[in-house]
Image 1 (tube, each protein chain N blue to C red):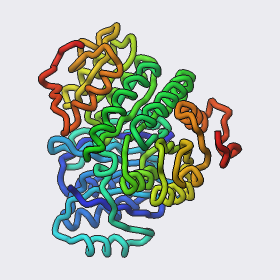
Image 2 (image 1 turned 90 degrees about the horizontal axis):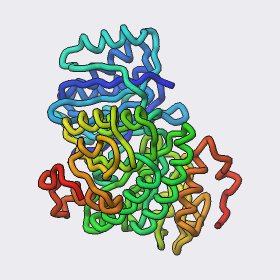
Image 3 (image 1 turned 30 degrees about the horizontal axis):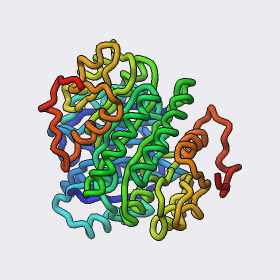
Image 4 (image 1 turned 90 degrees about the vertical axis):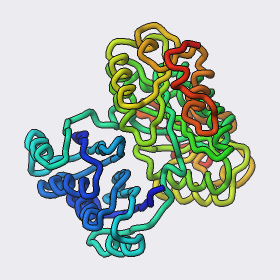
Amino acid sequence: MPHALLTTVTDQPGMLSRLTKVFADHQVDIRYVDLHTRNKLSEIYWELTLGDIDMPHLLDELRALPDVHRVEETVPFGKIYGKRVIVMGGGAQVGLVAMGAIAEADRHNIRGEHISVDTIPLVGEQALAAAVRGVVRLPRAKLLVLAGSLMGGEITEAVEEVRKIGLQVISLNMAGTVPDAADLVVTDPVQAGVMAVMAVADTAKFDLMRQLKRRY
Amino acid sequence: MPHALLTTVTDQPGMLSRLTKVFADHQVDIRYVDLHTRNKLSEIYWELTLGDIDMPHLLDELRALPDVHRVEETVPFGKIYGKRVIVMGGGAQVGLVAMGAIAEADRHNIRGEHISVDTIPLVGEQALAAAVRGVVRLPRAKLLVLAGSLMGGEITEAVEEVRKIGLQVISLNMAGTVPDAADLVVTDPVQAGVMAVMAVADTAKFDLMRQLKRRY
């Protein structure tokens, strides 16, 4: 597990460069970074593998930089929010898939897993295709469920693209070509949510690769 | 709206420093950055406000760097996934809050909003308190709903902390001190989800500040 740091700095051009230079100087490997800005301050969350420097010295060097207000070690996000199952599509079906996925995630999280279920109700071919393509850029996203009654065209192309770079995709049984492009097709939305969580859970025996191209 | 860039680079120490130096040299202001690593490559997503350089020249400078494989302009995340309502707590109630929130988000998203509903079913005082504190570090998170039957102690402290830095919190009506610390208390989980989305939607008339400390 990498180390996690939270830094609070003045929001101005060059700040990120000032911090990353310290990491580069010490061969610190940045595994994940997340910056956002609120009220003239930027909060930057880092996950790092230390290089030729230990944590107390790294903290000292960062704290000595100008316009750095706060530096503290923190718990890695992966330990808090864990793997993410993403559900997108029409609201009615997204809600039912989420119900199944949340109930199943609860069963695994009670036994020590960390699985989140994230949803976005969304309509329109272009909007959905862009959202599908974006999933591979969402941190910790492991599996996508497409929930709707009709999806094809550019959404299907997007599904094929993201599957090629390793994202698993479950589709509800629906009209259009998206089911043909998915790893698995499920008719019952609640079951689709349950299977999605089982597929990413280490505590479950469900192997999506063994179910490849099946329809339930 | 800022510009968004997607860069694909070799995963090695110093890469981020190399890129941020270009931004610093041209007074480019980094509004958001998100880096993650897959198969020896790091994908870095940037949202930027341009300084003394235009986009074509910035793209050229980045592409000229060693170990930079791909640089492209892309659609900002905020336009795709939008504002996030986060629901956390016991699985059964999280599922029902999510149902309400997703159905309501669908109604607003159809009219051009972008609202996501993200959930994590989670038990235990320490785990929940850590997750509550983490919400302010999640990009685009606007409102937190706590769904359960008993929450207090350190979770209540965490709720008070995040409210102070501007996160809105809705609590289900439950045992423990969390309801006393929340902005609003709602008994019906589906209604709690609906109200949460109404509170963050620009297309809704619901003003959480006018409902402050009420119980439904």
